[in-house]
Length: 228
Image (cartoon, rainbow, N blue to C red; front, side, top):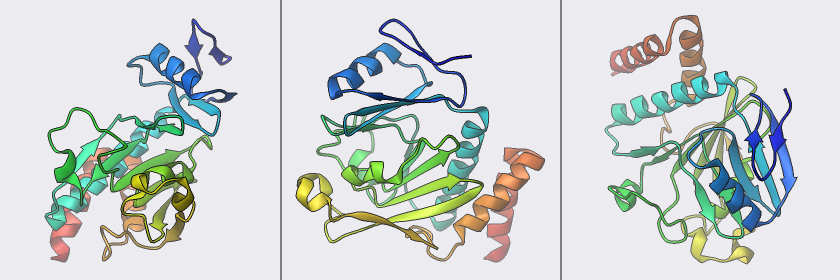
């Protein structure tokens, strides 16, 4: 089955990735054409539009990892807001749809809001991405100043943390200062510094595939309780 992208039809077989040259206006037109469809996913960066149709395993993995984050936050007594699906946009510059995102330190700033103004409201504190088709680039989140991105790729969770002296308010800084920001690979999460989240995610995914997701989450809760 072939990918089809025309003014009248957008269809991608599962796992397909299509890259097209295009303007911000082209991206907006495709977004409008897609409407509320969850697939294909779409993003815009630097005059390029990317479309991707997730494989079934994509959704399963992101669901398990998001559940892990929620359990860990609840275990630590942290307040949070979580979103999926959500579209992050900076006009003329970037448009992206993270698999899952969490507001942890900034949850109060967006609590109760039906829409988020990406030029005014804070960006998510944590983004979770699953990359099976080489569609994901962690640097897509630099313009938004997302403090931490979890990228699950090749059966391994990689934690990226934003570095730079203006990361806490990037949207007001302009492009010159944003270029000073970068992501570095870290061994621990800023939100769970005393928990080996890579190990936890690997174990939960293993149990989820051997049994089911609920068994994986129950086992994680049991383990966290026994360690107290």
